[in-house]
Length: 149
Ligand code: HEC
Image (tube, rainbow, N blue to C red):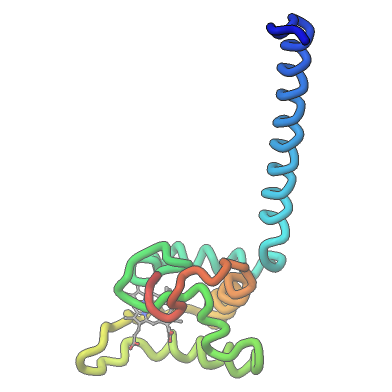
């Protein structure tokens, strides 16, 4: 048995090793792409418009969405499910819209949410946005879905 690597053995180890890790790399990229594509429902035009309402009125100045934003008010990523949207979609839609319409509550000792004077269409778009965010598989992040992450 040779005591030293021959040139061709070293070359084979180099090419073989490179190929081996390149195949693993391609596999990991494919897996990431699979998760990225398969994560949540389709974004409707209305949900996309709802995201713009969310941004225009800077709801994230007080709320978090999946832990991102300010921690003054409840986390809203899964608010649709908290309002029972999976069981009674119309009831949850009405409840969310009337909650936003009836702010501020002026209840002593509670943080207040301002009145945004949103149109019925903007409210529906926001709800569609929350329906979309509720379908995103966050692997249970944030750990406490009601309070900020
Ligand atoms: C100035 C801070 C502030 C801003 C900005 C704000 N909110 Fe709120 N929001 C609150 C607070 C505080 C509460 C909780 C009030 C309470 O429980 O009495 C709340 C509650 C809510 C709830 C009910 C959450 C639940 O779990 O019951 C929804 C839905 C909501 N906000 C949506 C929005 C949307 C949409 C926007 C942007 C258009 C927005 N908020 C902007 C402060 C804010």
